[in-house]
Structures are given as C-alpha cells and as structure tokens.
Image (cartoon, rainbow, N blue to C red):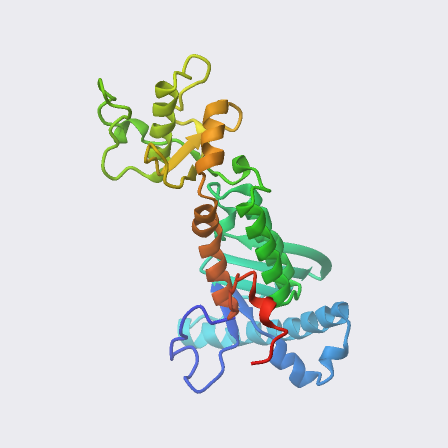
Length: 311
C-alpha cells in the first residue's frame, strides 16, 4: 500500500527506508517484515501462529530497548531522573489497511499476549450511517478478504457480480437507497405549488436528500395519495435514490421503507437510475480502495472474452 504522506526529514532521512506505517496519537505501527526476514531467513516457512509469536517476542524486546532509551531522553531533554515514559506493545497485527488519519482496518491476531481474531475498523466511509447497509456489508466483506490475502482478481470478480445484481434488478431498490434523517426541510422549501403548477419551489443549495423529500411529498399531493400515506416531515428517517430522465424531471426521490404507495413504487421501478446508484455510492469508494492497494479497477465484464485470441 502507498504511504499516506511523505515522511519529514527530521524523522527519517530521504535515503533511508521508513518502516513506520502509521502514527495515531500515542500509537505507532511498524512494518516488521523486513526485520523478521533478517532475523529469520526462513520466516515464510513458519505457521501463522508461529509468526505471531515470533513477532510478539521481537516487539517486546524493542519495547524494553525504547523504554530504556527514555531514561536518556528524560535526562538530556527534560533534566529529570524520574519519569513515567514507557513503551508498551499493544498487539500483533497480521495485516492492516490505512486509508487516512483515524480511518483504517487492522487484523489483530494477538493482544497483550492473548491469541485472538479481531478485525478492528475505524472511520472508513462504508461505516457511515448514510451508506446503504447492503453495500456496507459487501465492502466490509471484501476488506476482510483483502486483509486475509485475497487476490486482486478474486475481489474484482465479486465486484462484477454485485454490479450485475444491482443493474439487473436482483437487489431490490429499497435496499439500495441512501439512508438519511430529513434535516432543514423547511429551510429549503420555497413557495407551494400554485394553480397550474405541480411542484413546490426548491431553494438554492438544497441537499439531494432534501430535494428528494420535497419531490416525494409533491407526488403524494399530485397523485392524491396523501389521504392514505403520510408526508415525509422534519427528522423522519427515509431513503432516497437517483432517477433517470422522467416525465416530471425529478432527479432524486425519497421514500419510506415501511410505507410505499404502489404508484410511487412503480415509478421508482421504472425510473430508478441503478447505474448512478452504483457509480455514486460504491464505485468512487472502490476506486480509492483499489488505488491505495495499487490495484487496477477494471469492471469490463467482457474483458476475458478475447483471452482466447492471439494478437
């Protein structure tokens, strides 16, 4: 994986290799593989459990070396003989993915001397509340596979399958909507529709979710569905999706998961822009993920069709 940013000269000389993968507050993460291969040329032959034990043993030794060095630091920099500075080994990580500060995933296999299997994920985009759960679960699953050694092609094929399921209606629309709580509805709602008009005025700067909510309420009123179905109001939890070109020129539409009028459902099935759903919600996240791994994201389903021909 690429380095998150350039290492300052006062930490590591330009000609030296920086083995520090990530720093977060009082934690430091180091790539120990070069050191382990130096100490154990046959390191690759050990089992995973043995590798974890060896790594922990090396980490504990360096922990003591650094803690002892703190004595020199305390005396020379702070002119004190007693201090509380201490280096402590937190855990053994078999593999990790660092996206940015406080946005990472790590596969922890030992913590404080105890063997365990924990995937610790912090701050990654697919964990946000406005990310469709079905897509978040998919992203979480392929991330786990990557951390455990899955190949580029294996992950790519799974993405192609999911994309096909999104585009061919295999996955229901209500599972692809962006979840959100409606905010600032009144702020961006302008004049109500007057005689001869169909839609409420939407004020400049309205977020897509608010625009989608206003248009849902407009359709309820226009199609006289408001006697049997509730309007979406401030603070309601809804989902919304992008639409293709349609007779009403509506760009996105919100809806309740539990109260879907048949006519709204039919409209969504006909005009939902499933390609845009894939591109806007998942594809850009995947592009960033693949770029970090220095992998190519080629989703052409016909790429292998020409493998049999020699050029």
